[in-house]
Image 1 (tube, rainbow, N blue to C red):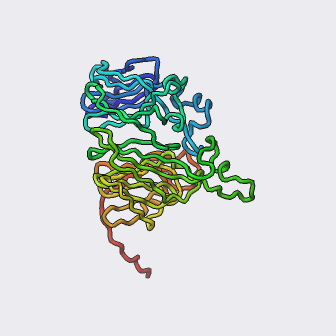
Image 2 (tube, rainbow, N blue to C red):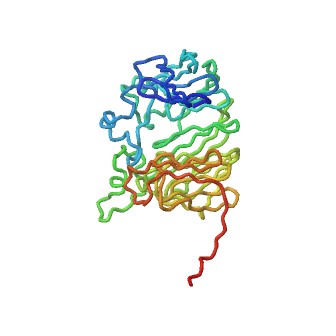
Image 3 (cartoon, one colour):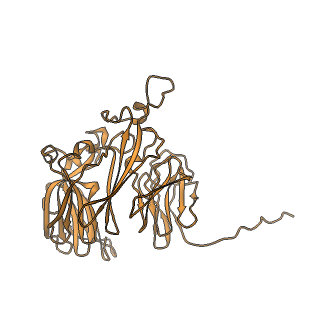
Length: 377
């Protein structure tokens, strides 16, 4: 979205909507109209996008082709590879540049006039029939982290890149650093083939009730110089006490960044922070997050996340408080601090979690004083 238009992808095209009237102004197809649109972003005068196989696009039909398309219960989810990454003139839709390749959608990152992404040059990945793949297959000796000039598409640098990611991999850019965050598994079944129902399969050892086998979730963070791709620091988070399958948001456990700190609090674990410039990890065991999916969001003063209900962590006081215990966010991102407001649009109605209020809530800044209840006469 820019000052005048909303850009959104539908199947193989991008529709341009006037934000003042709601009318469709243009339709862009990108370099290859036969492929579906994947990544989308607008920066300055450029519309960035990627094109992927229609078989990789989530739909009722493609969801039936593999149970691992879901992010919620499987021990590993499939990730989408695009076949090309490009930039269009946002006014005309004309192609400015186009980069073919097997590009991991979840890794595409724009910052400071550059485009970063993870690319597999393994022929099996480049020729994959539907582009929906395991991270364990996509990452390896033929995987590269690439930086392009955002205006021209010219390659600036590339570095070999193969973190031990299994169920999560994201890139984020901040203060001249490119930070990869990922999750992986340790324990006796760490390299076992993925299973759909992780909770029932990976902890079921024939006992009644099932006993935990010891396969644990771990998280890793690696910071690279955004100008060269050289590694600056690597930190592993060993605080997880959860067996694989004991929670269902670790596949989307994206950290929250400020200018100085990385905040990471997966469901059913306590909060950890990392110094952005050094990677030094700090465990905050007094800030425990309860169950729940959803990805945290952040403002200048706090992060917001699901902890059964909706909770927040205040940076200044380093305390946790509940925003609401009678409603819950969506399974993805729906607690939005923006414009001095806390916006919580209703997206939980499809969930069977027992919360009495399924409605949109908007909170404004303010203060109040507790007053004693009036005396009865």
